[in-house]
Length: 394
Image 1 (cartoon, one colour):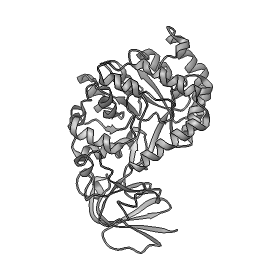
Image 2 (cartoon, rainbow, N blue to C red):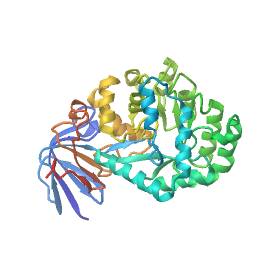
Image 3 (spheres, rainbow, N blue to C red):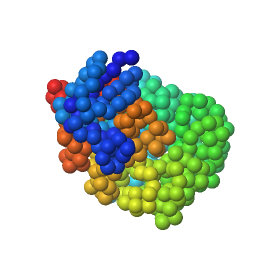
Image 4 (cartoon, rainbow, N blue to C red):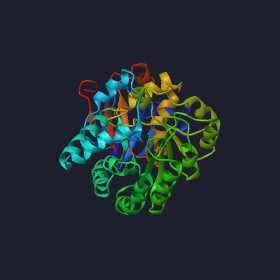
């Protein structure tokens, strides 16, 4: 086996309290030892290795785990964003604009655009990414999006119940029946998760329950868009069905917080969407203080959150959600892994994939401290260097 030593780490963030100091398991002046794409050891003294990467005293942390994106789409909704900034409210039904553009796009156009977004995310330190379908809303179209998403990640999500398409206007129950009976058998083999949008203007709790239980019967892990625009039944439905995550969680009652805190369902917060739509930010402090598992994700999509930047999400979480820098970094790494039911990413301890980010900074605190500044000097995935900024890390 070939051993790689990542040397001269000024501050190593392991996200494992057993490996170092505090919740983030901090180790100073460390060497990370990698074999066959995985972490095998953390050392404070020099180690023999076949190859070495010297990070020059920089901070190293686990690659970000972006557990909620809609990366495969066509079209542009900048005009909609401008209208929101001028005072028009966000509406779930605007998804149909992207549906029309995506249906009209060819495979190669969608592939190129999605690959560009994936590269953009990698440059921002994202090493693990979830990608949903949901912008075609036909059997063949949703399968097409999942195949394209599968070229980027193994963490794909069938989101046929994103919104009721125009051809089913006024017939939401008929569309849900089509999702369950026609789309699911074709799309389930191409996905790991099943999701639905539980919201006025999209689908109610009974409709979402039908979709998620059908997905589970096909071996898919449930996730749910829940409580984004107003209070509703989504969070408690996600907990009831044992979903991996309830996503958005903007409007929560005390009962919702209690349900999440007492469950294995992660609360995935998407503050970049609230930034873009001028909605209230989710109550992260209430969730954390209650003991809920909190994840942070970008929600990259053309309508409500057109960003792939997890550093931006971390900065928003610290400034607007009252999270500490430690909590935000954990939520963007280990929390994201929990929301994807994965134990091999989101940490840098033996047994994990060697997915790591080299910051051109002495500490992870610089992520919220220097918002908007490109601090990612390099990215390793499975121990392989996949991105390097020649200026930040010569």
